[in-house]
Length: 151
Image 1 (cartoon, helix red, strand yellow):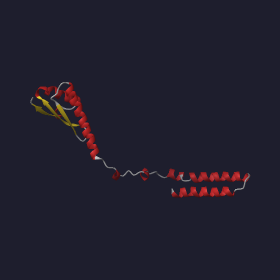
Image 2: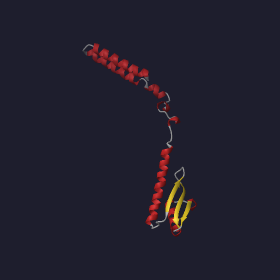
Image 3: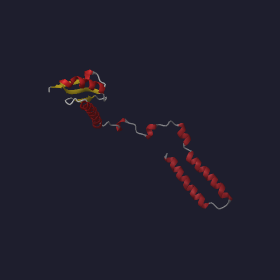
C-alpha cells in the first residue's frame, strides 16, 4: 500500500515537472495523452493483485473478544426497569378493579422471563388478584408466591 502511494506521488511530481518543460504545440498534446495513460496505469496497478488475493476482513477490523465487555450494571438496570414496569402495570390493573389492598412484585430471571411473582393481597381479594396476575403475565400458577394480609 505504501509503495502504491509513493508511486502515485512520484508520478504526479514527474508529470508536473514534464508539463513545465513541455513546449507549446502539437507535440505537447501527444505527450499529455501518454502521461494520462501513465497516471491511469499507476492508479489501477494494484487492483489485479487485490482481486487475486483473498481479502481478510480481520486485517481491517479488530474482531477480537478482548475489545468486548458486557456492562453488567447496565444489563441489571434494564432488568430492574422491566420488573418495575411489569409490577406497575399490574398494580394499576389492581387499582382499576378496586383491589386496593393488593400489590405485586414481578421478579425476572436472567433471560428476562418471569421467574416468580410475589402477590401481597388480603384474603377477600385473593381470587381476583390471583386470576388477574395469571392472565396479565401469561404465567403458570406455580410461579406466584402469595403473601396474605389480614384486614
